Amino acid sequence: MLKRLKSVIQQSTLLKVSSFNGLSVVIKMITGLGVSKLTAIYLGPQGIAILGNLRNVLEIFHKFSSGGLANAVVKYSAEHKSDPKAFSSFLSTLIWSGLVMCFLTIAVILVFSEFINTLIFGSRNFVSVIRLLAFVLPLHVINLYLISILQGFNEFSKVIKINIASHFLNIIAFALLVYWFNLEGALLTIVIVPSAMLIFTLYYVQSWFGAITSFQWSRFSTPVLKNLGQYAFMTLISSLSFPLVFLGIRNLLIDTLGESNAGFWESTVRISSYYLLFILSLLNLFILPKMAEAQKPSEFRAIVFNFYKQILPFFVVGLILVYVLRDWIVTLIFSKDFLPAADLFFWQMLGDFFRVLAMVMVYQFHAKKMLWHYIITDLFLALSLFLSAIYLVPKIGLEGVVLGHALTYILYFFIILFIFRKSLIFYKR
Image (tube, rainbow, N blue to C red; front, side):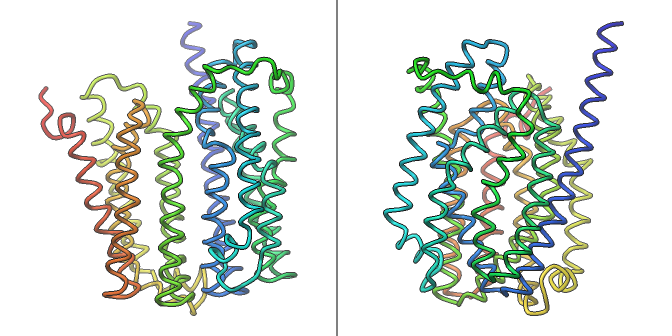
């Protein structure tokens, strides 16, 4: 009876968290659409391209300054939350290593601020924004670590509330700062909002202040540092590749076809990210836990094919609707000035279809800690996206980027399918 009651309570909690997460996804999408519209109205295609560059560079600095340890913090917080001594040792080592990585990143930003400015903005001078980023970066890292600790403590509803607050803060700050300061205001929003979010995060972690402030400098642990170092090495190799690739592709487009064409591609990628948001949230919330629980190849096979049968048809219908309404969608989200982006939809969406086909299998890498499979295939993916753009853009223009995207993800799908061929194709009952 007690087990049944516990199961009912767990299911009720999961349903509540799932509903909350769904609300967060919808709010993120709506506010993201609002930011895109404001960008289109005030900054145009050129502004979207420049903001894309800054977001990619900011992502790179986030990864370096935090050591790429967000997932590791979730993992070790969950493992040690019931052991105060072990958690204190982990936290102390995390803070030591985090401080070193953060200050090294700050030094790099300050020393090379002129070069970074040229890399992101070309001939425009926004060095002051780059230097401001260096000073607020520690707040970004603290916020990231605290949210990861909350996830490790299973405080999912609090994490979702923080995310919802960040979406609202982002669009409010963006609207005000763009109106007052134009492009510089948009850049300031991207830099400032993650640090301002620390206020909300501190409010939601107050019940865990005892555990979070339990660190002691003397409890630095070399074995813990070694574990974090291995995790950071594997994570950074994979997670840094895509921001660098997108930055490289965008700059390639700017140099060869101009900022407007880079903006058209960026707007296509944004629309793609909006409809993929629902699939990603579904995979994270439901598929990944099932993959973690699956012990037999038959269970993994059933999860993959059930997803293909139950979810994929709805995704395909959604893609068809988006393609049919592409001109209207581009005008609604951006403006008529962005209509050339509609010509890129076919290849972008074909690539996204194969991306989703592969993604449900790739979650097995996460669930079973197949880190090297994940890293090698991700590096192949990033390199193929970049090289295909370099080869195809000079030959066929802007469409070359999305054609390369489609060809890359088709090949990626077959590589992932080959890795899991014994479980999916040649499985014997």
